[in-house]
Length: 215
Image (cartoon, rainbow, N blue to C red; front, side):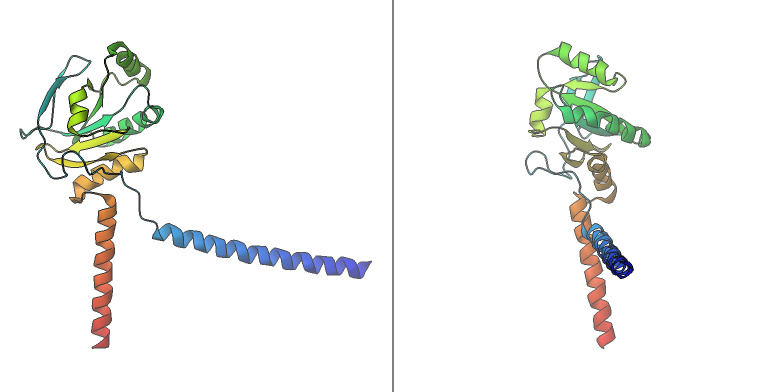
């Protein structure tokens, strides 16, 4: 009886050690994958105005009765961060507080605006109250969405103070929103392009170092 107990304990400890080894290996693989996966930026469509182009100035009026010009070559104080949303888009509702939080952290250089379309103005006004975004300009303009070729929501564009389109894309997370600002700051159209350039630079340095060692 005692021998069977000893054997079972030995087998149990072996199983525990094997599980510990497997857990360590799995943790290591997760760490490797985390390092290899590039950050996901906003998905940028190929249609509409191109990144780096001076945008067409679109004059409109917000539902708060404020005269608004989006884009154009005339210099303004702040860059315009326009988030296209809709009362019928559940993802938009979840993203709005995130956009506001990001805009507040960048309030010294970015002005946040919301844009939508549709003829039911009362629905939009109710939407503004529900989201508590009365302090931010809310524009209802079909022409604005058509100009920027907005086909899916939520969609965001970032126009700098000179009217140049710096970034655009489909956005679902704070990371996506931040990637648009990173694109403006770095001068690179997308985060993926930025990561790719960094990888190419690192590869070139490695190859140069290897060549020097061989010589």
